[in-house]
Image 1 (tube, rainbow, N blue to C red):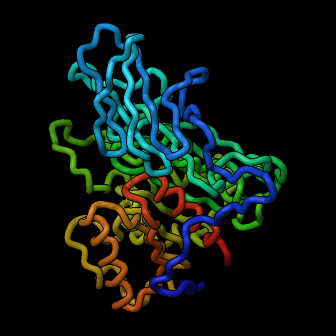
Image 2: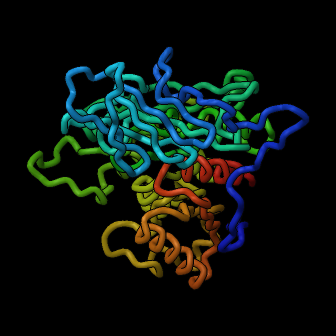
Amino acid sequence: MKLQFAAGLLIAAAALVSCKGNQPQVGVLTEPTPATTNVEGQEYPKINPDLSTVFRNDFPEAQAVAVNVGGKSYDMVKGEDGIWEATTEPLVPGFHYYTLTVDGKRLSDPNSRLFFGSGFWSSGIEIPEAGVDYYLEKNVPHGEVRIEKYHSELTGADRPYYIYLPPQYASEPDRRFPVLYLMHGAGEDETGWATQGMMGNIMDNLIAAGECEPMIIVCEHAVATLADADPAARPNLFNFDAFERVTVEEAVPTIDARFRTLTDRDHRAICGLSLGGFQAYTIGLDHPELFGWIGGFSGSGRGPGDRRDSEMYPTSINDRYHLLYISIGTDEPAGMYQGIYDLHCALDSLGVNHVYYESPGTGHEWLTWRRSLHMFAPMLFKL
């Protein structure tokens, strides 16, 4: 089946939920409200109706405390009760990592749950998005997110992965399912899509609405070092050779052996965010015998090394892949945005069919990638 989507297609990110009568609108706060990402029982951080946020922390011996969130640092002030407090400017909706600085030392907020990002475990806060509920938990049939691992002979170590099984996996025990391999970004790990990305909610809601084919999603740890590698060698972030071998030679066969998958390339997709987008395009284009659908969220499809557009994207590619998908946030760093936009233009000029999407008002952040998955998943496996 040929690529069936027009080049340069631009679609809105997420449907708004309308108000009916006196029913409150999803994501609209009418009073200061504790963040959903707080540790259970903790009142702060507390989000105001205008999305400014109040942070309060007890560091009785500290001389200076600040909170770093949304790309800005806010000095906290010690009140008469001895508690440090700061109120931010209105924050952009979506998920944000944040840290505290206490007397020059970076700390996580003990009031917040922890999330792995930027290479360390840090605090996180979810700012509600007015009128949008596609990534929130609803009263629909729920799939299952499992934490699994397999032993890799190539790396000589166990490799962890998260796997989403749709509701039908349990309710239809004789059915086989297509598979999406979904990668995280640099400085993140296999936990990201299930936690910060709210992958399970997004997929449950799409499947329940009949907008998406039920599918298995595999989120592996997208870094690999071969067992015989030189331990003194300097790692290259954009050298995916080892991870590509692990994915092709071990991960795909393992998933097909352990789960009820459809094992042909028409029912297997690969996608990722940021660095994972580079990986998805590199591996997907290298292995058309395995993958029929490719996506990159804030991650270029140009690949590492000296590969050129005309080499990677001959016009014949239109007959080999069902979908090439590229997305970017409009507020991402200028160089990153320009690189993705230039790739979109290059594919247009080469006559390569693809879907291009810009997430309005978002940067290099999880709301961009949630929106991208919400759009990408319904396009998959429609044969």
